[in-house]
Length: 295
Length: 317
Image 1 (tube, chains in turn cyan, purple):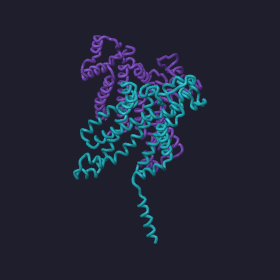
Image 2 (cartoon, helix red, strand yellow):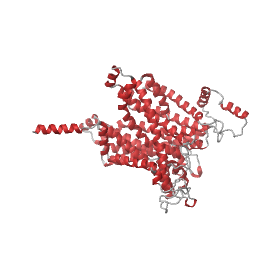
Image 3 (cartoon, rainbow over the protein chains, first blue to last red):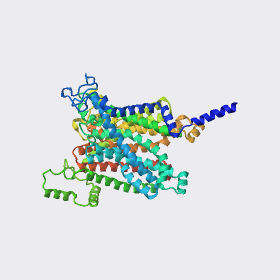
């Protein structure tokens, strides 16, 4: 009797055993900090998407007599900026360009960097050496300096900002991709696949990608936080997004002269950058520990 | 050891060459004729060609690069378009101010970060650990230029304790180590120190936690060594990596000081870069970036050599 019950319990356990991604998801849900961060990040993305429906006023239309109204003014819950535009609406609309400028470079760099790194790691030999040495040169610049150098040379503009940030994030992602791929390539099942005559492309597609994309992706998500700060920083310097667009870094820049008149109003856009950066950072930390099987 | 240093130095040469190539390319990826910013829009074709020849823009790229590199090696980085002064002397003046700021910030950040990280790693999973971890996450996630603005708002606008911008009374740019000047250093240095603090805290926490789990620590404890004695061993083992992180952070701060220098109008390289961007002064931009990037490469080299000489285990790698 006891034996049967044990067997049933054992069978039930087997039935319940989950795939890798499901167990990652379960582990992630147990991490309260990461879930909170995920909810905040999701909220910010939703705010960006539905900005026209949420924002109470036009982010670009100002009223001269309302210039620099303090927080809590009637009709202007978070005050008005230096051109009398509704601060709350500008902060909501600002999520669009700010998130776009922060996230898109990392996504593009993920695609390019992963491709370069996986190719270098899988092919090894002189291809690897040359690729990694070239990337070392870009890696030799502090990231802020490289972003500002390229952006500064190209001039202001959304596209130039995206381009410079993408260039900054390719080398670190490629480095991670290369090291993960190199370690996978040495595993026996890859050797087995090679021995059975599978083409390189097929081995990479069927056996390598599934094992390396996860860690590379998690690494890339950890860069989003940096990218948000850098992207807003470019606009803060007058590179990146140009007026009259609503973007948090640019808003900080234009409100900087107002810190003696309405100090806390001027600091508001930074709160949004901080909130976004820290929630993406903690979300990425949670993802990493959830995906770490060793735990 | 000597062969390691030699190899490391030799490895740096192509990197330096690559870095200067990237800096050279900056002027050429910028849109429009490089002369547009020097010449008035109604300049005659003759004058344009004359200037092209002077600046060497009429030659091939490899020729231009070699010429530029040769001059740069002799300390000639060209002239600023905005002021007409040599870029090298402008950068040289500014580097000193940036170093004062970055070194102070690194010392503050390393001391605090090391302390937080050490305590957190030693009392792992306690509330102190959680607090220290939270501080380090905030440190790496906060947009430091905004933090700078908040510092100015609190300590200059609201409390009126410290000056908001500049590097000395009356806009003086000549640094002196006295209280008059140091007042100006406090806010930017503390703001800047937040970045290395978070990263140093994270690194030291992981290091200490890792070392405490190693067998030699339980061995020391079994031998009857007191906690204070164990502590000394932990510090000795964690120091090389922690110092390496500090060195690299100093490099990042040198290169990344532009945002903070802009907030505080600190007359360093970052402020210079800001001016170069604002006035589209490409030679100044190029020269400043080159000097800062070279600083970073050399610092990397020094850190590697120092770390290896402190920790002989690394030499085998």
